[in-house]
Image (cartoon, rainbow, N blue to C red; front, side, top):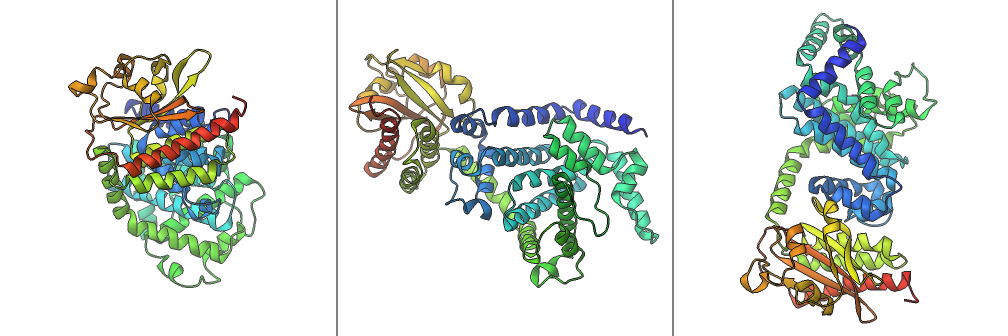
Amino acid sequence: MDKQVFLDQLWARLSEQGDFPTLQYSIDHVFSSLNADLNVGEMASSILSDFSLSQKVIRLSNSAMYRSFGGEVTTVSRAIMVLGVDTVIHLTLGVRVLDFFQTVPENRPRAAQALKHAMVAAEFTRTLAESRRIPDGEEAVVCTLMHHVSRLLLILYVPEAWDRIAAMCAAGEQAGAPISEDEACREVVGVTLDDIARAAAVKWRLPPLIAGAMSARPLPDGAMPEQHADWLGAVARLSSHAAESILSGQADALADGPLQDDSPLLAEAQRLGLEPAHLGQALVQARALTTSMAATDAASQAGDDAADQGGKPADALARLQRAVAEVRQEGGAMSIAELAPFALESAMRALNFSHCFLMLLNPSARRFGARLAFGEGMRDKLGQLSFEEGFVPDVFHFATLADRPLLIEDTFDREAAHRVPRWYREAMPEARALLLIPVRVRNRCVALICGDWGGTRFTGALSAEEADAIVELAAEISAAFLRSAPAR
């Protein structure tokens, strides 16, 4: 079959099933939302609009390499500040690609196995980069994932072709004349797996370097990579070989004991500037992933279920105290523009808000308006969240006069409903419990942190110790205002 004819057939099948536009939008959204022209708050808001994505970004940010930058990463805002824009973009892109294939409705055993292979290879690459302290390690992870995309695309969208490829490989093995998947793929559909991966990278408008790495051919015996794209492609192949060994059980002995000098994986790794210790650590970590995937998935599901239940967490005080300590430690030299998203997200995670936004006072216009918001759909609602500074008897104006947080346990309760302004109810129709946190500078409220738990009923109470911690968090924002405008 002609190469272009087959690729056109593949993209047509993705479009027919409705999956390609979704993936393309998701990838475009990563690059349009996460770029150097946006501030930390805007970038964090983009990630935090997807709870599952934000949790994965934070979890991956806490790998060994990233912790060396200074402490545990507990918020997306800190991940961006510590890791940098490029790393977070590649990390987010890798999560999106994996999520796409994990959510494709068809879930045949071959697809599940291919996805597991990709995940183990990605973990192997990530650990190699961490162990070797290679900059932009997540870029290599994305290349490794794209190296596996071709198999997943064939299995899910051209299964009849993949069946022929698998049968050809099996027949060659039985006849004592093994044929690689790449050779079988060329024979069946006229293109190699790397050709498909490169075409996918171009089709999805990924950075040229990633597409170039997919084009890098295997290194000749004894040769070393001379360009970064060649190195990325070689690492992707090494990780694929390692994952195959791990999943087949062949790597158990390698991970348990010292690597032998004649190990093919070691020889391949050393050509790429990696030492035996780096390879051994990556093998251990990747093998551990294969044994913990089921438990991790169960824990993740439980975590999502807990998040769906919503409400103030039982350990809110400990979370708040940790948030205050982190903001104090990191924010002492930050301007208000730098500290605000960090503090807002810290409050959101400590109290498990479904939505959270920061309203700032415009002194000349004498209006409060939302400038930063986290949670699903909140970026589109910023323009609706505004009120004048002058007094009217609603909960937002009461909060601007208070020194401590104002909690409305049920905004639909008869005694409270008439105090909830129309502009808020129209923007947040499902919000039941509402917490308003004033930020005061020189005895004037200059900002409000507003958080809710969606439609969940508020249970328990806000203890005096929790309120004290919230006041301390607001005080850090107040101090940032003073640093940014000392003459105000």
